[in-house]
Image (tube, rainbow, N blue to C red; front, top):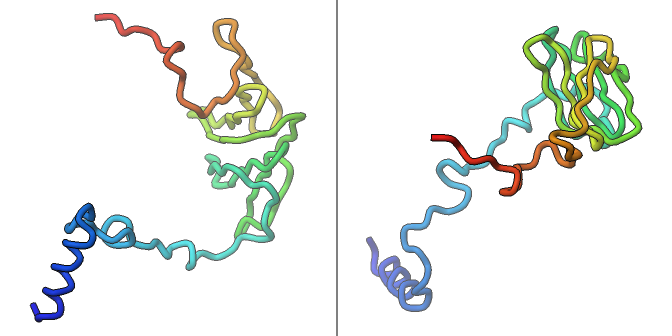
Length: 147
């Protein structure tokens, strides 16, 4: 190590005592930049208010955006159609084992069939309205584990 490098290190230790001398810079190691998004091919015009994406069992993609769930299919996902529309906002999406689309809305959890029709809706549990389906439960809703 050269003289100036040692001098700089010593001055840093004197002037910045609380700084961790072994800190890893924020964009090194596990937190290095991810440029994979720069190399993807766009699949069409942007969808306004796009929130969540779920891949269907048939290879199509469902995207929640505002009050609508869009279904993208075909070569390069060029075919776009409104799969389901709601009178409330739609957020997280997931497909269950039977191929039904589950959608979190501001009114509850909705299960949709392959044609986008509502099969079932869960709006409350134990007499309490479901508010934010993707949030952690509050401590008052946790139950004690039995031994």
